[in-house]
Length: 555
Image (cartoon, rainbow, N blue to C red):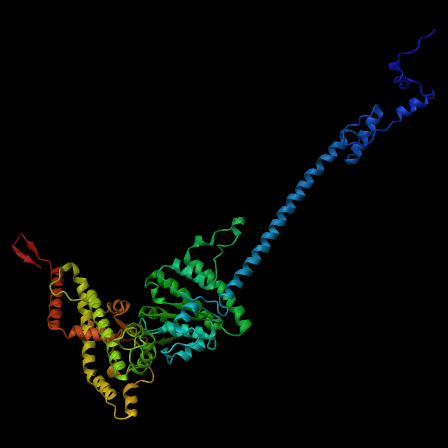
């Protein structure tokens, strides 16, 4: 008799049962058992067939071409493709963002520059408004409206185009004041001001401030390895700014049907050398092109003649306007309206007093603004004359027994004194005429004669008798040198206008010339100094060489 199989083998026995035998119900349930779908290894997978079916399902879901290893190989290529697509998409996204930023930045630069010409934007207005307006906004008394003001107003308002302007005149004559007055009237609408400087790097910064242009320094283009614009130097940066300004001017012309206005103040600060000429020539080229197109009008202000001499060589559309000092009548109006504001307790100034002040200082606003704050204006004017005299002697004073080391300085001083002496002689000849005019003012016979005595000039040009001057050629003959005139002009000792007339820089300077020339021993000191220069030059030019062969001296 057969013994029963062990109990632990009973569960395995059906696996080896011949297929023609029918399993029991219990064993059928065990073979057909399906484990629940957990995310980890199937704990109820008790058969090899079930495990193989599971692997086939996994291989088919991963996209493989066959069972086993083929399925896993096909699934390995998909992540590489996904990475390539993601990388390409990121690069395209960054490129698109950079391109959009680039175009937005260029648009923003033009928008900011156009805003710099908007009404009321220029910071210069705040400074000008503080000096020319009362607290209630009205114009202060004593503000003189010059005859050139109407023309300046039209240029600032954009009513005149097709030319650019050069304002010439001595220091303190009122050139900037006229421009600021015109800018106040229209709140600097379509106008900007640039302050020139000796250093092109400073000009670059000031131009950027005037135009609200940052020279791409606030751009993120460096993330794309673009070159820093500042590496090219200030001149090319200024050229870039002017190129952007040209685009803004063209758009502004189409929108407003008027040109923009750019003021270059103190153009004489640009050095009279090769670098300065390059900068000035670059600005003039733009001024010529823009004035021809009618999109922008440039206004240059200068105190010195060398700026005009350089610009004239290439100028075709330049309009030159010479600004002179106030006339005696305008001087009286200025003192009469301004003096009570600083000295309320002072008595009103008479025409005779204002005429004496004009005789001492002339109509120079820079000097009148100093004396008008003093109770005794005539005494203050005399102090200014004495101060200017000492300054002039410190620059061109004569040294009769000078050393040969300072011979070049004494050449300049002696030649300058010859010109000063000539101006003093002209002033002495006109002194009786001026004294007669003052007497007629103090003791007028009729009101009509008083007006004629004071208002001798309605065109802002003094009569020749009261306006000592010589031509440029005559001044060179008087000084016997051709290279000293520009130095005197640079030091504001003389003034040269567009017609090449040479004058004392102011009537105050003319009185200094008269005072120096009238000193006792002046002519003797001048002659001694010139003789000393001739003697030193003779010693330098002559060499005596001893000839030992014959014991003679050969020259």
